[in-house]
Length: 624
DNA sequence: AAAAAAC
Figure 1 (spheres, rainbow, N blue to C red):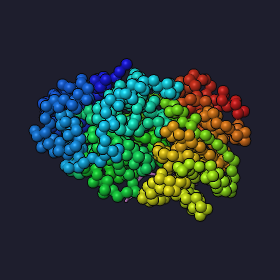
Figure 2: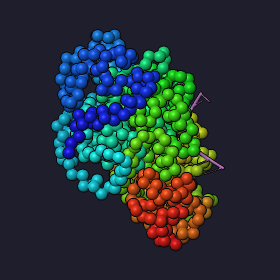
Figure 3: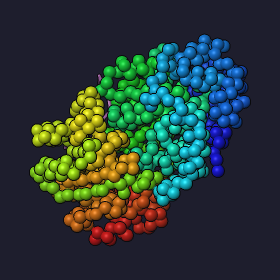
Figure 4: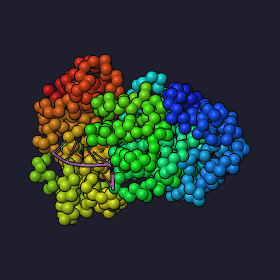
């Protein structure tokens, strides 16, 4: 089947009806005009000020394809009738010109760019020929078979889940976005994209469990960008020096926010949708200037956003889309208050009136429960890994006493240096527990002839970014990191992840080793285990077993003995998925308020009864 | 106990 743009409009329209009831109850929010109200007289919607003929013109083409809209010109002549619109037409410059100036109504968002500003080409090419429609459809057609994806386990739950799509063409995100997808060399959607994009385009809230590197960022960016392009005549309030983004993407680290921003800029290139990033450790005035030039999608870390909100420079009143990346981290004890403040205590529209999307590779049940506060009739989606990235990562655990760790690491690095024949640097990412430990290990490596750098929260932002660049470039092929680098960061060519100090939480381990084995490449993950990691023994052994890794006998023994953290950390008892919907565990009717229930995935297979006390019998017996 | 996130 195909999902046309018209279909998705129909879908989202039926959703909007619901949220619109709310908006009528809340006149303060009338500044946003839902699509089906846009042709009504301006008196109903005082702040709406777009010229009516253009709205009619848009409605007239609503059933058509994006490309026909862009190409037809349709004589809507959006310039001129209103000074505001004229200014923006000018502001969009090249983008507007490329659309033949005919895309009436595409370019009148008040978040437009300043005059004369030219969008930097994030692809670093000016060659338009390699993104022809023909090349795209050839790729699409030749890629119809997705056998490689057939085996990937997918679980969805919730009401009326929109069916997945197989191609980007089917999704029909719009020609401008399609061009960028081609420029990114994406041939076909990844599994999380196949499922998540129709769900988000259908206007639904989403909790998605998918490995980083599986295309999560695009999965939420595409529909957000597409949705904003589709939102005609969103007239934002005019309050002096107040900034009104339409979408908010939050992430737990500055570097991750930067990375999302970079990606989102590619996806939105020449669409007229403006993406801006705001994070701490960098001059706020510069970020404010950038914001003042107009923003549709704001990517931010929580602290800096709270700052901007408290200064009353940013308002969340117009937020239509809220995405939390690494959502389980965003809702853990350290972040939850800030997130609640942003989402519940400022001026953001309630859930149900905005669309909320939560993404993470891991989703502990207790976090799912917290997260459900932010969601409305959401769909839960769990997607296995692309090419099962655990297959691409060889995991090793070695028993290393604290005092031997350095020399053991040295041995590994020496061996690696000798084996690493290719001119290409093999990058090694070493995780430690503390910032102090990171500094001291880096220093020790350097004086022992291994060029290393470090990234952690005690370093200045400048130092952090320099360290990351230096590592990526191979100048310092060893990066010693705290958990700041554990999540989301896409660093190509990391061949080896060393857990010099193991984390206490198995989820953190999963995120850390996920820094290697990316983009179809193989990777190695080595962990140094000793008596201080006993609480991780069971979950680690299970995870490795699950990933068909060789589990050392001594670890198996520790695992079977360990009563430590036997429930909290135990969630990989044979589950094929990255997670499962906690709502479906309600029938177990027990322990919902405690860790004692066995963790998110301990149920592993639907319908397995007797999942209590953290010991899924079928699996635990293997260790007993 | 540590890490991250604002000035």
